Image (cartoon, rainbow, N blue to C red; front, side, top):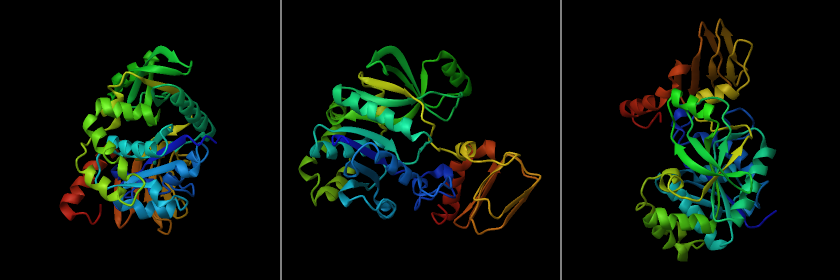
Length: 361
């Protein structure tokens, strides 16, 4: 196993679209949301154990989730858990992880990935990551993984690429597009040169630090100034103070959309970002009338179809005459809404917070 290969797992989100299962105090990456016996972050960690040594895997998370990370990933040393005092999007999180790794190993090649995605074909995923790490080690490039789209989905960002290739497999990125309308998504699929943006990045430490220096110079300065404290007792205090100065910006907008050395690897490994209940419904096992029930031991359904049901295992639930609904209960909260209106969940969360405070959030 290559000792120059590193992984950064981003685990700071609150997963509000999965409320009420996902809470601010216990977000979705720490849940076994698919009923597999392992949480999403545990599955992500296990995948990267096949790519790099366990001491080379880092988790960046909110300070409040430190104990959850330690409990679910007990093999991780304290210095591998990087904590953020506030949410500042993906650019500061990635800068912190990459600067820290570069201070340990300037020859590092790094994969950065979210903690809450589903990968069905792990062998294909590992092969794609290893190929990308090798390419990033040998070239001054920023690699992103693009998923070959199976449908015109409006929930994903898209990457357009040219026919200019590097190493035959990596294509130069032309444009990034945020979540499009259905009509635009259809034209993307028809054109054949668009991929879903998986939010998985691979680069050498040198290449990404150079990109921060060029495109986000103020943020670069913040984390470059911290070089004397990385891997010391003063690291956390220094970084937590420095974080307050960071702008709230994504790595996509801050660097990837601006850099001229971005390449994409078209990939197929059974990927889903598990962003909504609809994505869980698509993946879950269903009965003959399309109901997906997790767990299913004490749920009885009459004249009901195409429902997504997630309720406590010890609760007896009877549903009758319900079609195309989401039914979710957790933490003394019950949510019932039509499946085609699940995009309103974020607004519901905001309304609940305004009316009842943070008790149910």
